[in-house]
Image (cartoon, rainbow, N blue to C red):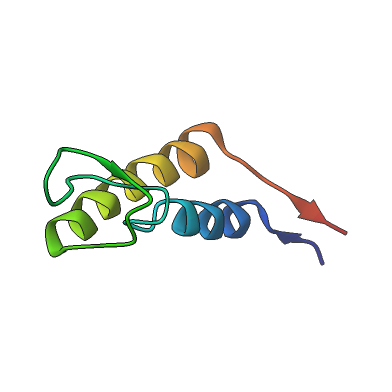
Length: 70
């Protein structure tokens, strides 16, 4: 039995990288985008969730990333 680890690795990686305030925040408190401010808001969480969903859909469904471990 082999497991497909591609979607898991992509989802965890994107979740970490797209956490609002970690690398960037869109929209920010005073500007449109801020980098590394470690602050978040409700609208920023919503925007990052939409970005996450779009990127993961493209990578998993459209491109079809697969990592099989035997």
